[in-house]
Image (cartoon, rainbow, N blue to C red):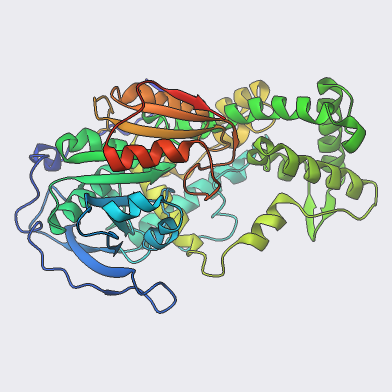
Length: 486
């Protein structure tokens, strides 16, 4: 039993959906007549959209239906066309309709020749029967620091999020799961008239892809998993595992900054850098530090933990924070920089977070007793001071109104997938990608040594993984062994 399910009282109950023949599309849903039209005036004319009808409840295929919004950019060459490359950007809760247009310029020309690039908004997201819980800005934050004095507020917030979601979207929530989204993917495959699909998934999308390979192994062609999750940790174990990786990144950063003490003046040894950082945290706890229009207390600084894999950027932030604490004008914070880079058409955050909780709470059981979260937050903070409590504190899933309708998927198959991974990924760390590699026995993993950031292919930054990906997608051949490249 993983940390995710330990102490959970809501047991999974299998629905009639589990009795469906996994390799056959539901009668009627595979013979839809699709009407394609331009997605939007601000999108390329080549990006077409349609809607695929699917059952809300796959255990009741004759009941209520919902529409899955699907997009595509056709393959560049009719003669060389291999099939469709279905894509998911991650989340859970992220919309994916525009992903074909975003990836068209990033994929190799020989890949674009051979595949229709196909995106979709997963059920509950964007244009696919979206769920909105009406969450406040504070309730849209997925992780909150633990302290004995505020834990009661954390419990109340988690309970309120669960109550809001079930009040506003209780008819949809039980059906917004990874397994049902994988079934939707197969319905899209059938509606497109394809015998198999190839796939590119990022972050959560890697787990979604892995679940598809488990449910529909003979439908899975060439699967690329960018920045992979460990399917054995779904979902509480994922949140806690991310902060474990943050501690490793923090240690690496102290060495990097110490080697450049002449430039940054944070300490000449890793121990001195570590001490300087925690002194700054204590200073911020006493008196929050103003930086770029924000006030940073110690918890707000610790919440920047994913940035520690990007050593230059986080060093600039720490130096700026130190200067601001001394009353010296300073540079931007990571949050301010991210806000400046955010697209004007960013997705509805309430929908993204609401759909995320639907999946996170609906896929697997969570502990129900608040005391277990409190104890684990205290224990994780002691073991991993930077962010351990942020990953372990109580979440809305403790108060979800019903347990999962199906058991979480055990991924254990021989599908030949390609996993690409940055060595220093702050959100899906290398240890998780190795867990995915163990679950997909026929797969190979290409690790970008020194690679920073969350995403290899989807970021558009050239890397040594690009050639491996293009070769696999165009020929179907994996590297003979796992590779680490520079």
